[in-house]
Image (cartoon, rainbow, N blue to C red):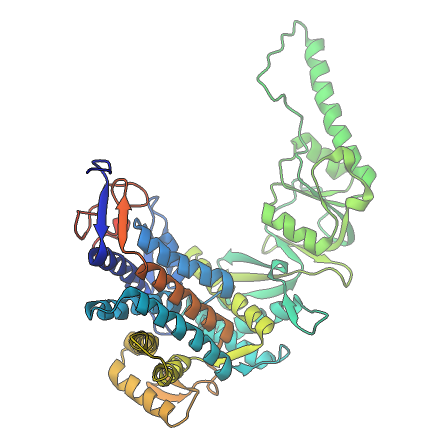
Length: 544
């Protein structure tokens, strides 16, 4: 009996599992070479020809033209890791790929997927418990340790060259937006941290500024550019002549009628400016346009006006200066205004806006780099480091890096496996083996022998050296915690959880039914497909 359309495709049982596992592993292998301080970069060229050079896992996976439903599930692992922990995306995806590779070996031994899934779930729970047992607590005021966390996050990225300076700026930025809650916990509001970039100067000239930085010019040369204490209006309405919503035509038969129209337009603009003057505003940041004539009137009144301010800058200015974003000038009152000191940097062509009063929060990291590509990658590295330091302050736990925690977890999981009955024991051991991918890849990417490195690491951990990890610069096994290679515990827990859940989700699928070509965009890409001629990795091609 035929119950599916003629274009439909179906893959079942072992073929479906192989298809899904191979697709997920292809994604993981695409980012493995970027892992660690010695990881390589990827050049990504989109359909418009724009080039991105990065080794940030989530950026690579987002920019790749992936056209496969299973592969996109693995990309979601990276996105979840980025949203929840800020860093560790490559680790999460690499572990997910290794879990599926080890699961494939178990499937070939005729172990049922349900047993593997249960074993992975048990191992994931145990691993997260052991992370908590191994983790060291950190005082949110311990700036030296927080700097090490930031430096570890930036090592291997373009921000590494100036990581000492940037780490100091990052820790200062996070401490500037951290508040202590009633229960004694620390809350970091990164909404109050803005990042601005500038090209043409060295990254070593980056700086942290109180308040906001607006990369705009005054709309009129005669406007003042400095205020010690200004009333600031944030306006989301154009200071322009109002136009009809529909196309209209007006017939005139004398110059007087034309003049009346022009006079009416001028009166409209004067009225808008007068409302701003009456409110007491000294500075106007407008998200929309400002008419040339309105610019003239504002300059005559001694009001500084900036137009086409970005929406994100408007929201940040609201945090910095206070007040509210006004969408209707008719309802404007002096209560809608914020207060700030404003100065102009003529060399950099920037406005510095600093809030007045203790309740005003907001700092800006001004990142500088020689070219657009350099400053873009610098920004990605700093954003990750900001998230990691904020997570560390909120969570209060850190781990030794350099593969130390992965080898320790693998050892403890193998001991735990002895207490697990049934075939799930093999899955727990496979989970432990997957963790050792991290030190192996760290060694490979550094040009070291991965087998010798793993043997040395296992030996050190068997001797009770919990913090023994790989120093990729010397090739030696050492106490990475003391060496300043420190990672947040929350990021590792999230990576374990995301990787295990993604692997289990893929393993649970035993039947793929597609209404047409198996791709998320419905394209005609060809690729290595299992039975039924199902579409391959799409835009990822067969090159993985």
